[in-house]
Length: 240
Image (cartoon, rainbow, N blue to C red; front, side):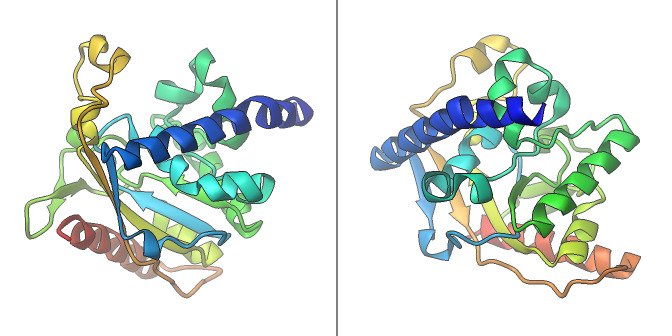
């Protein structure tokens, strides 16, 4: 299985990653995608968690393109790991090319979630990069929300991110995405997902990386502090 996944990664995942990176740069050139504060982006840094809000199904495809140079120069070590919903992405046959760099999240299975957390910690301790959506699903599906001063919102975070950060000492890169739900609307009409409205603008705001003190046995207070710090930083970034 590992050999098969390596072959898929080399001959399928990497070329698709390069292609998506080139398309991403073209969209930026034509201002369809706007990235704010590129100077904050920590290129070629391992043990990194990119943490983002989750307004639509577009972000899991869009955000890995931020790591184009990592794909190009250090693909085996620094190509980011995605954390897709197992049902929406991982289990669909046409996403097979994601699997060599994906940690599927089984949102309805506590045991599956625990296995995913263990895998994330392993990747980070080997100086890998992970893209994570701590809301545990798209924002609009939430029941409890936290708001910025300008009324931007995120859901309550699902448990786990505080533990992962504390156990690994990983650097957290906050990223806020605006407008992706206009490109790929959250509608039960599948036609919207088949034909994304790519002419509509998406804004990606990159925040300052956050460092936390690692702890081998983090207390619930330590984990809660990390979660609240990340959440509050995301909401402040949303208002920039």
